[in-house]
Image 1 (tube, rainbow, N blue to C red):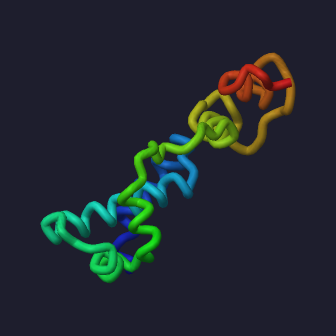
Image 2 (cartoon, one colour):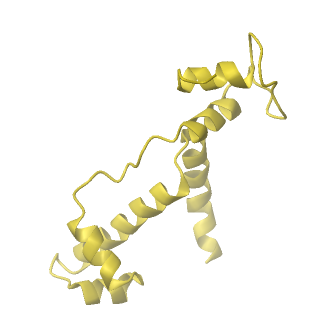
Length: 117
């Protein structure tokens, strides 16, 4: 399925830049698969039929259909720190000092979380 690569690479790049972890993106994709299968069958598809259409397990489909909580996931400070490190040109992508007044890991981490020691 190499034809998917031109579609998935920009999505993966965006996800990494935004600090979205793979499990969160995967969960959203699962939701999209279930929604697409329901839409394709005019909203009357059973879990079994959706399973056949998507390759997802029926128990996952039932859980996804009934899920009411936000799938955004918890905040991931480390992922945010890494995304900022790669995006901010004042930080060297090859490495940064642990401590210091400017362009250090500590100042970067404090920009995301105040409880960094």
